[in-house]
Image (cartoon, rainbow, N blue to C red; front, side, top):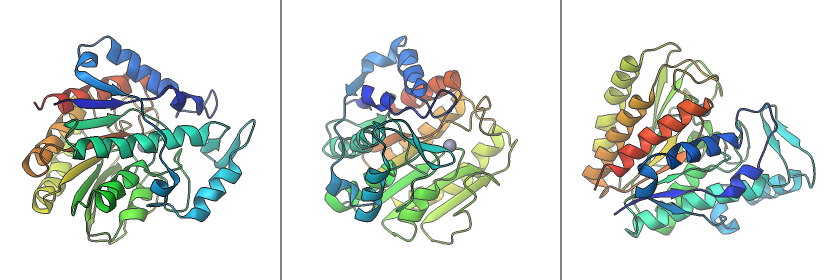
Length: 308
Ligand SMILES: [Zn+2]
C-alpha cells in the first residue's frame, strides 16, 4: 500500500504576480526538494484531472461558479479581493486542485492507496460557499468531504486544518453538518477575522496566540482535538495542510518547525489507523517560506509513508 502524491504542471500557470507569496515557486520548491530524497521513489505520483461541474455543485452554488467564470479574464489579471487575482489559467488550475481532491478520496476509499497528499494550488480553505477570498476559489477540502459523504456514503468524516489562518471557508460550508467534525488551529487574532466564534457543535476552534512556543501549540492541540477525534470515530480523515505556522514563515507569528508537522501527522495517522483503516487525504493550503515549506511537506510525507 502506498501514499499517492498528486501534482500537475498546469497548477503553475496560475500566477498572481512576481510579488505575490502564493506563487508557482511553492510547488516547484516542494517537488525539487523531494527529488533529492528517497521519499520520492516511495510515492505514487499521479497527475489529476479537472473536477466536473456536478462535483463542484456539491459545495458551491451555480450562481457563484458562473460568477467566477465571468470574472476570469482572457488576458491580464483581475483582483477578486485585495489578495486574490484571476488570470486566464486560474480556473483550470483550481479545477485541477479540486479534481485531485476528488480523485484522492476515490482512490483511498477504494483501497488503491493508503493515503494521499495533494501538492496543488490554488489552495481552498478560505473559499466560502459563495465567496472567493484569501488566494482561494474552490474549497478543496470541503469538496473532498462531500465526495466521501454524498457519493461514497460515509457517515463520519473528520477535517483537521492546521494552517496558521483559520479555515473560514470550510467552517462556512461544513458548520452544523453533524456528519463532519472539524478541528482547526490558527493564530488569533489574525486574518481572516471571521468564523472564530461560530458556535456550531461540530467545529472545534483552537486559537493560538502569536509567539506561542511549539510545545504550547502541541499541548493545546492534543488536549482539545485528540479525545474529540477519537470519540467521533471518523471513517476518513481529511487534512487542510497549511505550513505557514512555521517559525520562518513571513506571513505569520507561530513557532512550529518541520518536526512539529511530523508530530501532527503522526497524531492524525494514529486516529486514521484506529478508526478509518488508515484512510487519510491531505491537501496543501498555505506555507510561504519556500525552504521551510519544502522541509515541512517532506516531514508530513515521511509521516504519511511511515504506515505500512
Ligand atoms: Zn494560511
